[in-house]
Length: 212
Image (cartoon, rainbow, N blue to C red; front, top):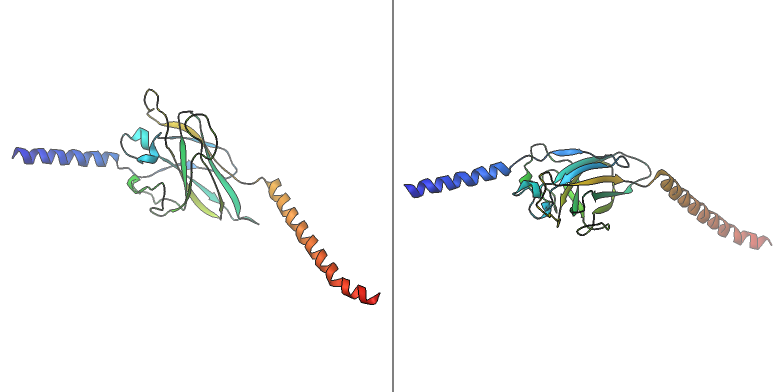
């Protein structure tokens, strides 16, 4: 009887721990492409055990952004997370689509598709930074639609213990400046005009030679 009681208590404790860590994924906010940088916080070791215990060390934050149809497009977008504390080693993943409201954190996959989102890639250590390793920057050509960014920590440092709210970071989604796009278009038009002129000259040259 005592053994059964202890087993029941142990099972109840395990269930209570699992339900305590269970929580729906929520979005921290929205990023505007080519707009203002947003700030957030990331669990320092989130990449190795997403949303595991203790949660202050393993949580990710989720952001969304939307690309509207533009011409000529598509453009190459750069998604960049910069540490605001030298102890953080930030990491990010990009997905196409939005996570269904109520989806549990246990469904999250930092390296693959899950729920209603399609995994597109990850960034880690592409940019030099002070502290452990580097900061992430992911560059991709993206078509119009809605996207999700997940930001967490990787091999961070926690001297004296990890903070209750993780470490701060700055997140931005950048696109080519309008002037750069205009110059690219002008260059393409110029190349096309030159090729067309050369083709016209070659087409006229035989008749000109015969008339001479």
